[in-house]
Length: 141
Image (cartoon, rainbow, N blue to C red):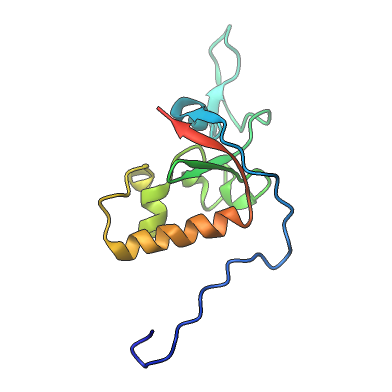
């Protein structure tokens, strides 16, 4: 109930355009494998070791929240080269999402120590992502 005495309506996280999602997967994805899915600079050739700008198009763009990995490929906002939310790609961005931060140093999995208000924000992000993006796995150590 709000301070005005009205019952607050739950937020509607449904996308404007319905999304057909695959059944969630629980495939194990290591932190290292997750990081490979946001490679704006990557090894072009194992033989030469040259680096080049660009995303390895053979890899999906992944974002993890509370250890659940979402495939956000195709959403330009997470494009590792120029997307405004590229900082989240290839990471468990739980803390940053909870804090509404786009600072690279906040893009870490640690969220348990946050205040309840920020934990609620994180839960809302989890709901938002799960209604729009396929769950492709779980982060493992």
